[in-house]
Image (cartoon, rainbow, N blue to C red; front, side, top):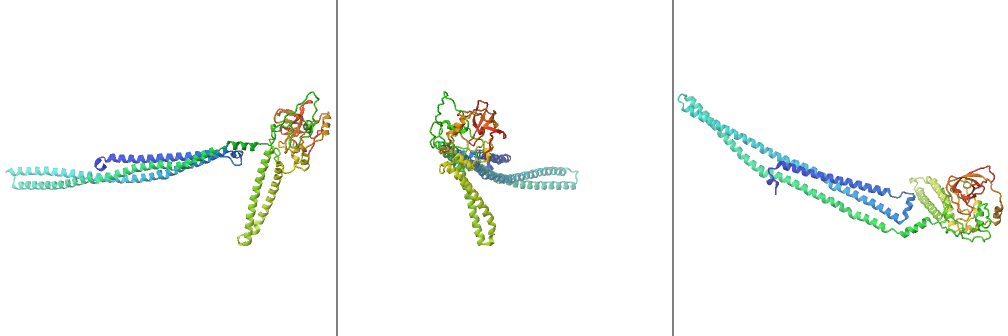
Length: 556
């Protein structure tokens, strides 16, 4: 079916229909454009979501990603980032393959449509103008015929009248002939124009208009085909990324399947294992016998051993309740001695590894500079070899410092792992390992070590056997009935339940008297009244010493 033959008289309707077709194309372009904007926005939101839950560098959160469940979550975040990338691909492909192409096609379509309807209007105007010319010729022919008839009648009337002169009759005859000739000429002109008009009209409705309408029909059909192709492309763009999206989802599934609950449980053990033995049984306290009074922190531990043999190397004190004592809230000493053995070992090993990495980095830089210096020596035009010496010297000094630091931490690590003899408390004080600042500033929360008041905690099990105190020292302290003088006051920072022998319970914010300051073991002796006194963790109180008080001591 052809528009040229079937719709020859529907020029205006075809013009409206083709404009509607272009409007449909532009509407589809707008639809695809909005879809691309949605895809870009969705991809951006997915990327922001993935970035939001990524672990922050050098933070505690980053350490949590050693667990398989957290690793799986991290893999999910990375896959979601790739997933977002595919939605960006969809947007880019739709923009380039559909939106941009259709926009160009619409512009071409508008120009072509404009040209076709311009030709159609031009042909229509031509036939209308010719029709007007035909009508004018027809009216002229009709008028001339009527004029010729009137002239003929007038001549016949003059010819029949005997009173009219011969000259007047001749004049009327000539006028009638002229009118007849004009009528004949008009007839010939009208006939000629009519034949030409009929010919042109046939050409118009059977040739020109069908050709123009056929081109318009082809243009409209191309538009329909093109929008169909774009719809296929629309689906194909989505289909192309489905395999990659499938791989992203497979990656998430694989990450989920890699979660190992047993491995995570082992990591929890490695992260929090203290290395201590559980507390032993508590000895029965016979209150039928007079209770011996504790004087110093050493008597708390040895009073239990009174009349008994000294503990064996590697054994734990039965009264030891280390795991239940709060940890210091300060930054801790450099050798991490405030941490339980296993945690201390891990921290020291981590520090040694970091220092070794820094040493290796410095060595690499030194090697590179050495090679550069050799090149400068062989080829002076490339640079001055002396300019590298200062940097080499600086690197050497940095390496020496780092190596000394690494040796220090390796020594502490060896001590924890039992590769070196453990030094006693006395030897550590004599060797200057205790910083004067730590011993003089009693209210510092970061103590060099922290132990229970019975003195049973050491960094290594074997240390307990080395810290032996003569029984006579304790006997003297027990026999001393004179109350110790106060050397200052203190304020309880935290509530402490004194459940161990020789300890005293305090409430947060309570003010008490200090009768014996911390000797380096993490405990301070305090007094509430004449009948209540005992030890509390130094980190639990803020001490205000009276420098002029009798018994105040300064450690160097």
